[in-house]
Length: 68
Image (tube, rainbow, N blue to C red; front, top):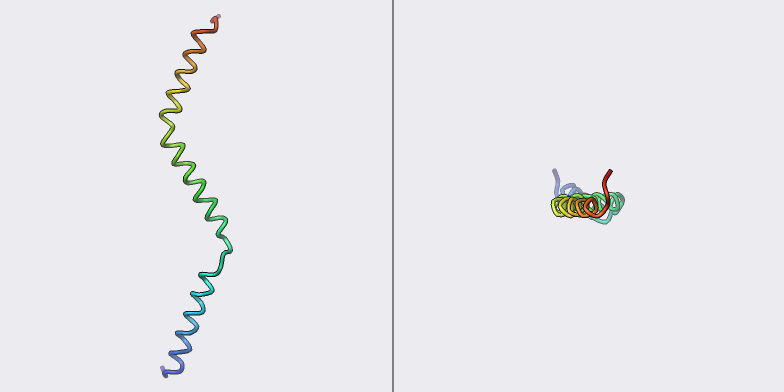
């Protein structure tokens, strides 16, 4: 491989990675996936407290309302 062809190869590699870094197509899909993942983690973290609050609310409503 001659020096000239090596330089050409290096230039083409640099141009490829430069254009790859500038490409924003598909970025919004990745952002939506990250947001959905964070929402799933938040639901998982707070599921215990949400369940206990719902159980407490249900018990309070059953205590106030007359049953059959």
